[in-house]
Image 1 (spheres, rainbow, N blue to C red):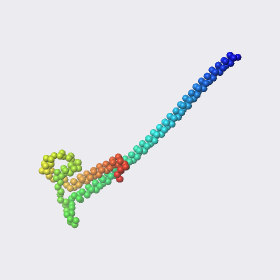
Image 2 (cartoon, rainbow, N blue to C red):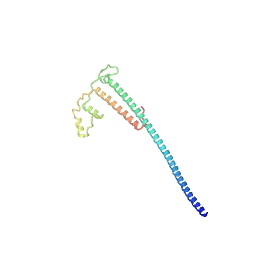
Image 3 (cartoon, rainbow, N blue to C red):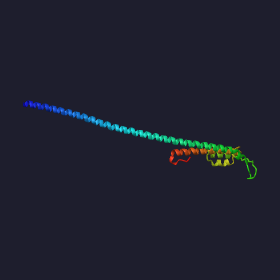
Image 4 (cartoon, rainbow, N blue to C red):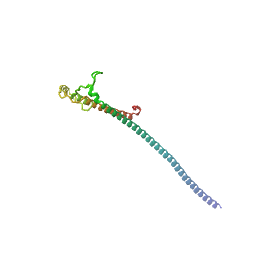
Length: 198
């Protein structure tokens, strides 16, 4: 009987160890699965946060792009209006060229008389064209300056009339205003906090 008890105890001990081993294995498997599930949940939460952050960044970038496009369109429209106004002003000035360059009154109550012809020399026209950038600036030459004073070709009549000069200056004025408006628009684009009023 003792032998039977000893064998029974041995069998129970082996069975207990096997059960314990099974329980430990099952627990380890459960722990592994539990840990894996926790890690997956954490990763999914981080991925969802990342997707949300990307979507918010994309929405902010699209909003900024839309604001920039609207601002650019407004500046372009303002520039177009200014250029049309300048073209109208230039056309109006050109319509008055004949009137202001052909007749005059020697006194307020005197009748209109033909305007005396004003002579613009070739030298005068050359200096004017150089001053506005239509001709290159000549190189500095002190000896040449003295020669220019005695240059007979520079002292001859250029054939340019007062009306011609006014016509040219009217176009030049429109060009200057157009460049000024373009520069204002560029400054306003680069520095919106200092935007020029329309």
